[in-house]
Image 1 (tube, rainbow, N blue to C red):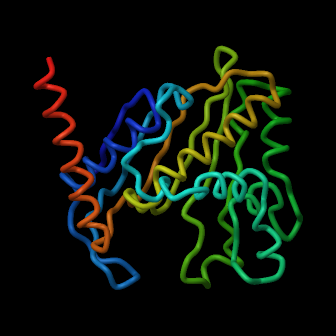
Image 2: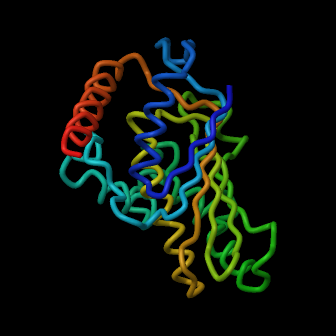
Length: 230
């Protein structure tokens, strides 16, 4: 129980997370009525979140044409926020971070202003959880909190998640949230520093077992080919 993963890039981190969850995860039940392999407490430290390769070629969900760009727009630019206002969906991460209701607080502006005044502040955070709304619905936000600080002229970000589908969601989540990290760094004329990602329940659902096994087999064959070429 509890795993630490260290990686240089986003793609390396995701690959290691899938392997760890598959090999070390315990079987558990879920509120959706589907079993899963689960690790309680997965911390991922990514040293260089914008070093290449950022995108792992083995992620079949990112591979869908336009899917990553669409997700970037939803998280960074708020292209789906209108659907929250029209009550078609319950939330978006952009809406919770940039327009937290009912006060309409732009938490990213607060975070940037706070660190601009005091780089070493420990108060530069943004939350998504809204108890008046989220405890009553079946699919509340997985991302719970972002925390940032500045060290050696680099913007460091920590992200806390209550629950995460490692195989189907984690890679795209990290790609988008590190884009937000970059946006904040650019506002402050800073470099992007390390990214730390912590998930309470990191899991792979049973419906993804076949795809996960296929993914791991491709990694094994690739590893064997690399060894044979040495």
